[in-house]
Length: 203
Image 1 (tube, one colour):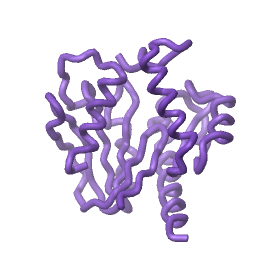
Image 2: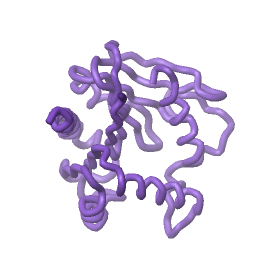
Image 3: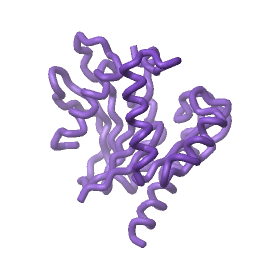
Image 4: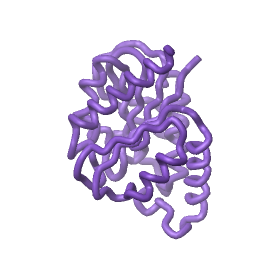
């Protein structure tokens, strides 16, 4: 059975896989295509970048993790080398293409973050996702920096108190793109977390 494990800020999808060197590839998804970097051997870790960046953001993290895991770093639709279809690029659009990519046999957004309940449809998505995280015992990892952007002390405390089976790690000072600011720390913490949850699953 496939195991699903989540990295918040870079989700990780874990499943049985085969080995590849780290290469840039593309695959047809819906009416366009998705570009992604792939390499390594073992359980698969799917890295999802923030916007307005691309899989390039994970370039300093992938090599070491690919020594023990299969890694896939996706270019979200409209980013990097992925296709640029004529869509609105709302959160729902990104989720639609991402879901289609994950379901493959191989495996405007900054303004979309709901503030004060707007946009309402995105707030509903965030609430649904939050409810899932608060009830699921799927392993979760939250890497954060200070002062950060969306993860202040109150948010971290709430997550630690309400999300089961979550690990939180402070990686140092920073704002939003901590993969760039602390690549070695981010890499090592992800590797340690993957080892910990693998050992726990064997108990």
